[in-house]
Image 1 (tube, helix red, strand yellow):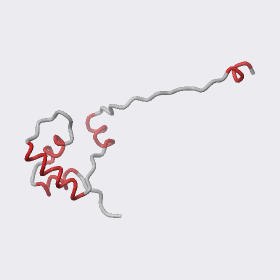
Image 2: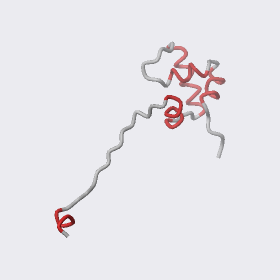
Image 3: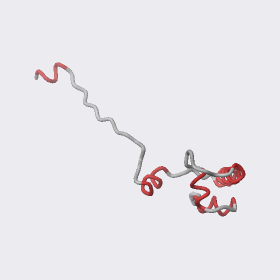
Length: 79
């Protein structure tokens, strides 16, 4: 199994900064179309996928919610 591509690897191949790679994958962030195209092509070549866990650690926001539910039946509460 080969090395997993990082945003730094993508930045080097695309000839842009790591920040430009990060902005490319951040919804609503400002990035030029030409830069976005270079980053997306480099990411495709390397098989890069943003790591949601790493982003959560950096931003301290997971944008996830949890739902906890219990399954009860009437017969189990009467026993």
